[in-house]
Image 1 (tube, helix red, strand yellow):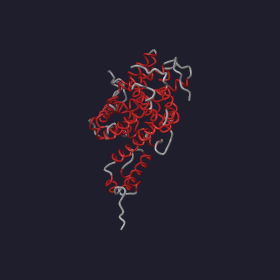
Image 2 (cartoon, one colour):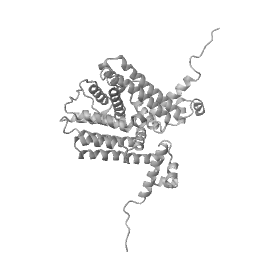
Image 3 (cartoon, helix red, strand yellow):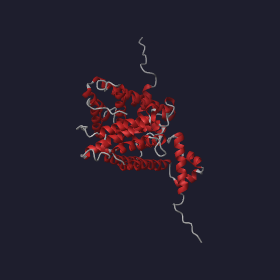
Image 4 (tube, helix red, strand yellow):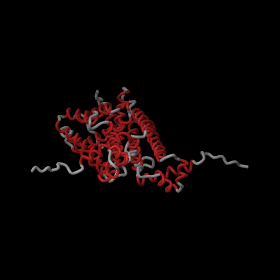
Length: 202
Length: 202
């Protein structure tokens, strides 16, 4: 007799279906206007069934936000496979070119969740963890350019802020969308990679 | 007989009291968790009375967000009174030093509202208007440095994105708070004001 062993914990598929349904609801109407009843309808389950898997809308948001933070960090980790010119191209493409995992919708979702993190310590902690990982990875880009660690960190800090701000502003401005943000981001990376440039003192 | 003419439309004081109460509620518990009943309690009015002045919580948010956008634009407008070194100092101080009108709370409020603008066209329009005004004012800083208008606009775009991102990231990161953001912002302004620097081509 052949025994079927489950490869995933019970209910994983149902949980993922609910998360997908939640994502579709947020995409259509934003997080604030999405209710647990909407999610249940979209996932074709009874609301009571949905609450068996997830305690609240906040829990759904946290799981999706954490997943998207991980996507960004895993993407930036790949930067280390390239030479300096390749790093510039890779980072700019990964962050600013629409893909399945990083696109207009995920950008909006991230900023909606970040808005809510202002009053949600768990979301805020996820954001801080992502920020620290990304800044460390960006600082590594300059390891053969700047001998001084504090300069590398400062450049990473600036690039990461520029990234956050240009994704945000580009989201709202059709005339200065992601392609425009990409060009500006690459220019600053090039300026920062120029070894002739004297880094300003405090 | 002396006739008293009202200097403000009837109910202005009450409206402002309600807006102040709303601000205090958001400061305490965030926008998402603030209800109209909370605002009514805080303003010491009956909820029905509150709805006489404001249709919804969204309307309160829009009014406060618009007001805060105007604070930023009016602040940056004063940049034109300074020489180049003064402009750098003034912009950095205005945006990064805690004051009555620009501080940790207003920063959090702005980003919470911007998160909601993702699915609110009116908020989103206010943000776009503020963005365009601020970028125009920042571009003017370089009027005696860059003859080419597109370079001035590109520098302004980058500085404005850097500003948005570093205010946002600094909000969540106690180790890299506003003072840290100010130093980084000034360094980039100084790099951009250096006339020896060759601006990268596309």
